[in-house]
Image (cartoon, rainbow, N blue to C red; front, side, top):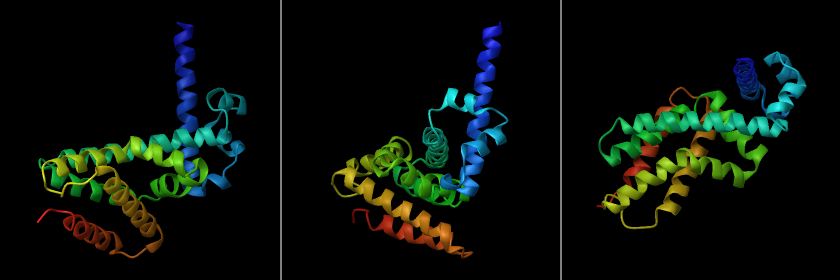
Length: 196
């Protein structure tokens, strides 16, 4: 019985560390947040933090994984609500852009993620989540002839890069119509991929 209580306490501590570090990283940025701030916000000791995470970078990586998974789930839910693969592609891309306008997502996913973990590790994490969904639908669209025959990997990377750049631009733009204009531009870009 005591072992079950300790396991729940450990999980609660880990959840508090993730929740509070996510809040701090998203509002202040990775570089401006110290471990002392994280443990104070979570109400735990540094020893408890180090029991769960070897470093601030490892804690950030766990927060980033959480954010990436949430973004991928939102994209999948939105895309899967459509029946046709083409509609799934468009809806999923639009969902990524709208989800990415959340400042906490932008900062962690698009600004600090590549800077803290390095481009290669960040890309690998992205490919395992929302990038996997994009590659899957593009592969289907190429196989059915909606998009002309070509390797899916380069197209996946091109579209992913374009959407990441658009999301970063949206983070700094601040115009009331910028998201709608970006979605319209993305829709035109996607339409250009279709086989005629």
